[in-house]
Image 1 (cartoon, rainbow, N blue to C red):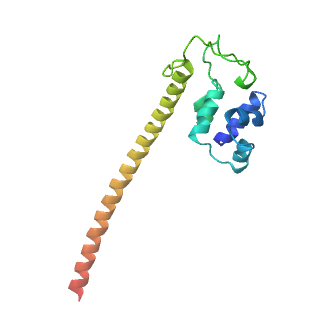
Image 2 (image 1 turned 90 degrees about the horizontal axis):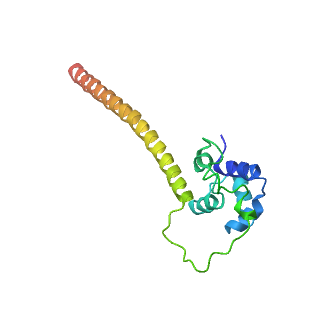
Length: 161
């Protein structure tokens, strides 16, 4: 089973890119991703957020779990065909103020992906909880049986003495 960092490198290779310019663009230290790969380390939340902002088509579920497709289609008309690092930089229109609380389509997709991951995790935990509850009930019954046997043996020892 591959790790998140291994899948990230697989995606970077799929996009025909190198990790060094991506590290620079994301504001990571030089060699950060390479070190994480070598150590099979985990990537923090802040770095993951930067990665998903940098690669809007990267499927969060695939990166985190290896399930599903590598990319999601945001919108056939606006989905970038190349990574944003190589896309031309367009100056914002100086007449318009950006809306700070504006939810983008990418944000909505990320929210849906996060929801799906959380829902799967909840289902998994609920199933695990049911199994553990059954095991707990079995262990309690076994404990009661052992306590009864123990009490019976104590009575037999007392009668024998």
